[in-house]
Image (tube, rainbow, N blue to C red; front, side):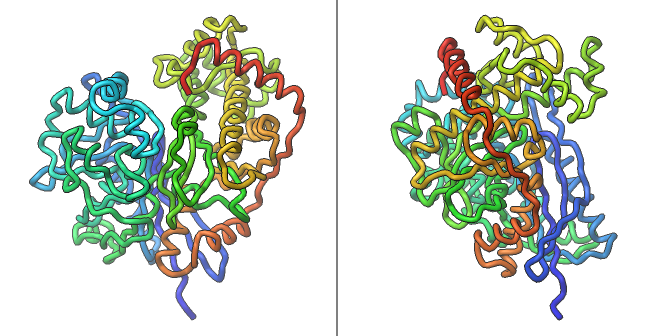
Length: 503
């Protein structure tokens, strides 16, 4: 009888991380969280950084725990948020902690680059990537303008999951899905574009070899083996971008679906064979990111639970709102349902909400500017966020329906936000289609499944999805109150138009 195979997944988000072990046995999937830890932004000298060494330490801690339990793992895979990167010097050392995508240095860099270096339309025609000020291309431009010493000294540039894999194996790669978030990759050639690289002073040789999800990067170094008590375990390049791993775990029965990866960011899109690069996708700022098995994730970023998370964090230290911090998520959200609907509507993607010193005050300011009721209580603010997110979802879903090469019959919500029963129902109401919620840990599941595919335990993405669907009890939400939500959507559109928001 063949021994049961276990896979070790490292899933790192912008606010927290976790290590998980998963297994597939006779077509049955199982997983267990090993460790969970915060991922802190470090503010110093006017900049924001990630602590790459703390993340490495947590990976080692998780591996030690697995070794202590005497669990023999088949492989290791790492996924993280997109766009950010690590500089490696000639002496094989990391050149300071990596800048975080919310660093203020990027706020003006995108417009400066597009005005002076390569035009917006030219960049989009090559990459098909949506314009976000923190995309890697604009981070490099900003660093070049500041004469960044780490950039000048860099021998290699590794995106965050690739950097952590390098710390474990000593092998340098550039995994396709994470590279696709940089706005420097051509989805047709599936390579980093030489002209875009040169425009920020970089060369292709500064990046690792391009690999697809499922590729073996290398095995744990002797140093890591000694620290953890493990053997020469392979490290697999899974879908390094967390959204790509999450979409791989969507338990869809066929291609006629849209997905909403709901967490700090909400990412809504479809899975296609080819990139969709058109005047319409350009105007609406959609993105074409790499998926697994040659697919493209045609999607749009929406500023998701970031709004809610930031408010909760503020309320925890606020004298006026501290009582709200003592409430559970379910208690606070239930209180929000007692508030009048659609009284204070915002555009979640307004620049005002990118990284304000106070999210509560930013929401109030937006409502004042649009001559709406200004929410005062946590319940009112929470209701404003949920109403507005659902309406923004409706807008993006309609755009997807216009360009999808197939009908969209269901919206799968995955990630931590799939547990939010109120927002899930609002989303069904707003979009007018069936919503299926789950899995919560979609990213980690996709990570594990891709390792299992590399090990030969599953054949392809559809077998992966069948196994996942069989292992889960998805929660179903059907649309309600269509007329009410249609009227609210008209109000939302008028408010967006009032402020002349660029989509």
